[in-house]
Length: 207
Image (tube, rainbow, N blue to C red; front, side, top):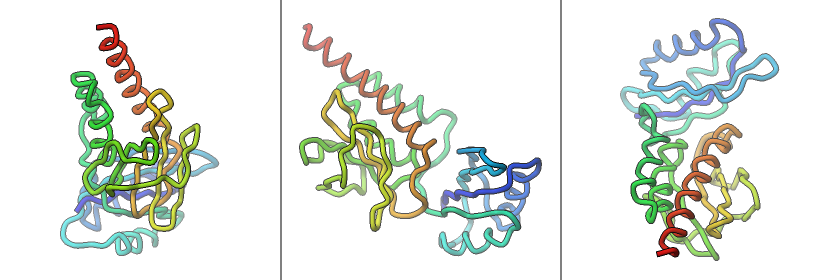
């Protein structure tokens, strides 16, 4: 089982190693660690781990929360399989087929963001949808800038694409609200895809 764990811990030498040691003692195989922030003497890190045998996010949280000074901010299942450069892989595919840029983007975002599904919405209609996404979805807000939304049963990231008249929505049913580092990363990827799509449309118009 692949799990994502968001852990807040004291930002001091050896702190990350203690969490890694604790995860190893519980049988978890750490596949990736991403540092989201380091502020006010604390660090917030995302661990992607492979856990042998059945374990629920709640059980994983309980096992780690007993560590002194450590706060488990979220544990959720993920489909993300860390790779060497998943962002670049996505953009390479988009550059090769820019006409399918947003469809490719929407398919890839759940894996990149540790989410469940993603859609691109325009004029109240779903234009592109990943696996597990609903056939119809009306975002609770269509902001002029990237935002996160803590909905009743979903954590949402809403990213506007002004040049395309779209909003890209990324959703996960568990875990904490998307961190600002996650939002900034996703927004940059969406901006690059939008630029490639706009250039492709301009070339076609010139033909």
